[in-house]
Length: 151
Image (cartoon, rainbow, N blue to C red):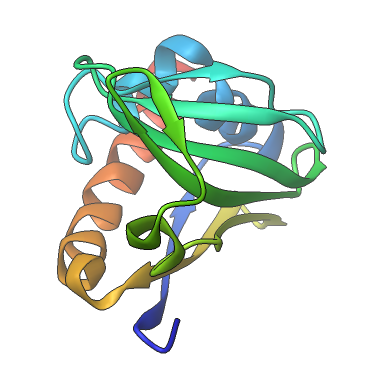
């Protein structure tokens, strides 16, 4: 697990925290803003604390996770615990144990004129550059959806 890197990205969005939260977790908007990570990405499951959730590409591959914390409009913590290949969850193989479990946290704060969004994510070294380059693109899409379409 020494291969795990910490990444932090943030953005200011000119919309209330409730709107940003809705865009981040809404089924249709999630697919749109996560496109830089993988076109057509979606999720199955619940955002409720303690629930399991699956993040999937159109091929059916993806990541299986659990919601570690959910304080609406304020904080979301996702614990990634395994891979999904061909619809099958793998949380115990050696390849999964090399990186899991890792956290992906979303912190929303009300600021003058809108919301400050901070993403803190743990990734393996091999995914660090991709993740650092992709989060800002994804957050720009969140910003555009919140500001342009919800105003």
